[in-house]
Image (tube, rainbow, N blue to C red; front, side):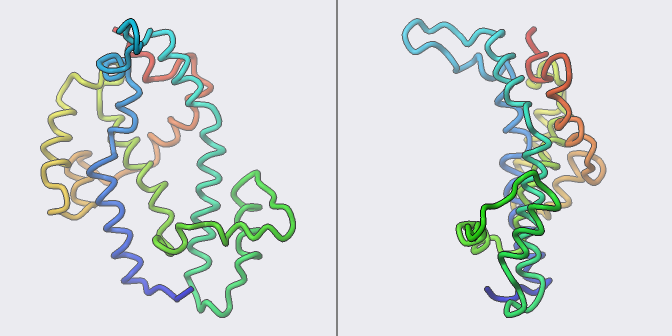
Length: 209
C-alpha cells in the first residue's frame, strides 16, 4: 500500500467528483419521482403504470436508516484516509479499521475478520473513498434546486443540462457546482435527506399531481 501524495489525492478527487457531479448529481433522486417512474414503470402484462400509493411506500422504505448509511460511509472514508495518509509500514489496517468503525458506525467486527482486506476500493480509490459521500452532498444539493412537487417542471432541468451536463469534463468540478448552485455546495440538503424517514411523507412521493 503506497503512500499517496497530496497532489495525487487531489487529482483523483477532482476526477471522481467531476464524473459524479456531471452524470449522477440530480438523476438518482429524480428517478424516484412519480413523474419519472410512471413514464416507464408499468406492469409487464397489463401495462398499468405504477400506482402512486406504491411509489409513496417505496420512497418511505428508501428513507429508512439513512443516517446509519451515512455513518458507515464516514467510517469507510476514515479507513481509506488513515491507511494512506502516512508511511505504509507504520499502518496497522486492523487497528485503523476497528477504530474507524467504533468512532463512526454501529458496527463491531468479529475477531480476526480483517474487513479491510475485502475493501476493494482501497486499491482504485486509495485515500479518495470519501468522494462517495461528497458526491451525495452535491447530488442532494443539486436536487434541492428542482421543484420537489414535480422535478420535471421549472427552470432547473434546463439549467442542469446547460450548466452541468453540456460542459461535462471541460470544466473544473468546483466550477460546475458553483455555476449551477450559484454558490459552493453545503450540507443542508444532506441533513434534510437523512431526516426524511421521520417526516409525514417522502418528498419524492409528495409530487403526486
